[in-house]
Length: 522
Image (cartoon, rainbow, N blue to C red):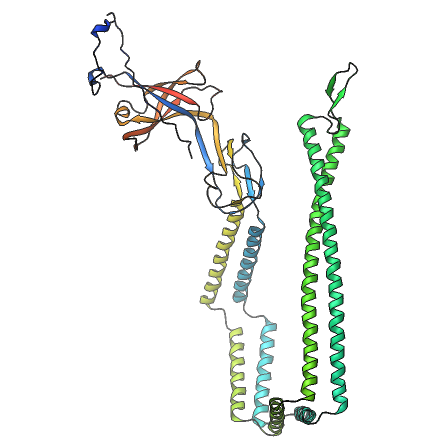
């Protein structure tokens, strides 16, 4: 966004072109102290207005997605090339979105390929086997011909149910003793679980503390090595002893030699690697501790559940409730009915269910053997195209995480820091970056009134001076007149751009300037 131009007061001066005549005496000049307006017959030959210097090309560079700033590559005053990265957001979640989109696209493509290819011989053979089994089951159901193994299994289930009912009605001393022993074992197991999981958790907490201490040391080492290396890069001096006394007793810079420079750089690289290793160790220790805490909770809950079950079984054995006895009696009745069923033929509902199963499996077999339908292929193709769009969007978001320079220029403002949370557009009213091309300048004024702008046009000549450069006078041309005026303190004013024919290398953005625009003589 362009910086606002300070309130300006346009000064209109009248330049009289002198010919061979002499200047009039003061008494001959008109008295305009009480006049309301200057007569048009004495219209000036130029208009002078205050202005500012602005680059011809500049832009606010904004993020198109929100996130956390992970890296800032430039700072105020840096020169950048077109498409050069300026800053980057954290891309971890965006990379996951891309990977997930690729997997979904591959899945959609595989589904299309499967529909197009049809069933494999192995799949058809497997379905044919299912059909044969369903037909065989239908025959058995119609005949009611259960095998001897079916009858033996049903008989065993009845005996088991009757045995449980007998114990409920009259438990033996041995059964009560066994139930009490199970309770004692569950209590011992619960205490053992509490002790072991607590020990593991304590060890994990100690390991995390040790890793955190190591990280603090690594951070300190990295900060020291980084400071030394940056000092060498900035000054070329030995950070431990920047100055020394020469033979004449004078203080002079103690520059490092190549060997010392390599040693300091190696120490910096090693310290950085140590820092990354320590950070990973802390993360791993945190994960281990969290796992130990979760394991402690689940293990104790499981042991407590087993103890509760054992106590409930003992209580039920000693004091069976009427509902429990009734439920077990129902289980005995169900087991007896099941035994009678396997000893008899199948009922009509059972035969109908078996017949329906055969028909369903035959329909499944037919679906495997017919060619794919055009509508199924079209639907599968639509899923592929939808996933392609999703993948393109994910890849675009990943690309938008890196803010790039739209053209070559200079970073005029850098308003974003690493770790900062940014949203789409400007951040707190300021763009993350302002990029400008300081190779071409123009002069901007916004206090020319409607009475002024009608007296010149695009292409009119102008002369430019500067408050900070009184020795510089540049020639220029009006290249833009804002089509729409704005109301400023009751006057309608227009923004006008004057482009100088040449410019001085000392020009700076927002420098105060003055433009004198030639107007047509009336």
